[in-house]
Image 1: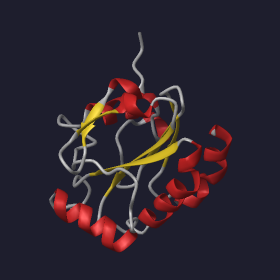
Image 2 (image 1 turned 90 degrees about the horizontal axis):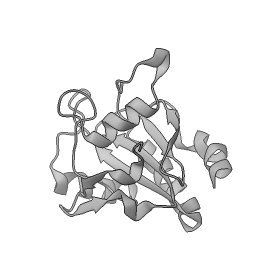
Image 3 (image 1 turned 180 degrees about the vertical axis):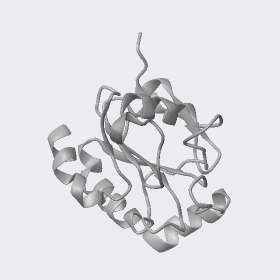
Image 4 (image 1 turned 180 degrees about the horizontal axis):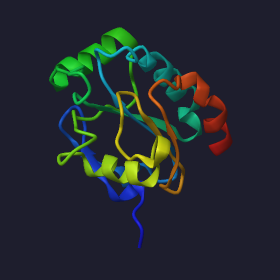
Length: 160
């Protein structure tokens, strides 16, 4: 049996374990984030997407990562405070993880395999790479870091 998003779990920013089966039936946008990146202002657009579509079964999940230029140096408390105070983030945030390499979180290993990037590469190239998981727990789109959240509106709408 092939894996789906629902087969994974991760630690929330507050330390609680989150089983992704809890998101069964929802459309999920998974993003590796960072607080000191040129793309960090995308938090605003991600929050806008979340607020716009959450009542229709859509959720954004943010996964802080420090693998790209050391742009997420803070601990869980600092990350949470930054996202809340600067961008009023209300979507779920998770504990800092690796997305590439030997210590990559199993969710991201699966995401990269399911939706390869340009020229078939699986590696994530930078912060704010986005993966859209449909209501059946399958990856349906991978978006580059430079793809702004507002550019996802039609794709999200079509999946809802």
